[in-house]
Image (cartoon, rainbow, N blue to C red; front, side, top):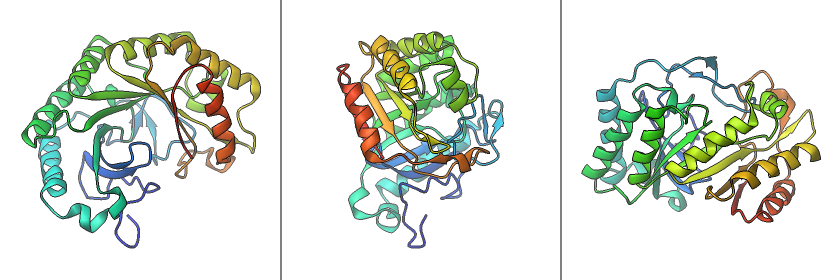
Length: 282
């Protein structure tokens, strides 16, 4: 929080309310208050994106989820939001609307073995607060585990509770994915997972664009990225295109810089040519 004790779009501190799994943020893309669910409390992820703002990020999977603790925290925080004065004390007036519950946090949420159970838990709690179907339940994912049967079934469950997925696609080539996400990945395989995801649950592509060593994505890479979108445009809901908002905690941090809003808007227009809606967050 800021010195005024208010949440801002640039502060996504997972410890802001002192809970283990639950944290509030002001989401510039959701457009209001988002309740974050952090299933990777050990800062472990199977990717390492160069723009990631998680400190001490390590490769791996999350520790076992204490479902009773998660449920207690979610109920307690929802009570503070819905029936208490948290909004008045910590959220600026223009942002005082609960928009979603979002699985994001400090690593890949679907890598938690308990992920299917957590979806059911969230459904139960939202129903008890008369919020089921009234707010979104969002999964923010790198998509790497979407083809696992348990994860895919969880996405179908997510769709039934007013859910949607934000699926990471930062580049359209193997080299670009390696440079940005620090993983070896076949782009064709990634697009196959994206298609599976979109057929199971409403899905948006999320793409972070930035300058590396002062240079934005080159034209060749932009064309490969646009070609990737063309291949899945029939199943996705749209694209969330965004720039750097928070400081990276990765070794490459000093090499990264924000792109002008005009640059992002130009790319957005090129995406729209493919008949795909785009939301730009600079």
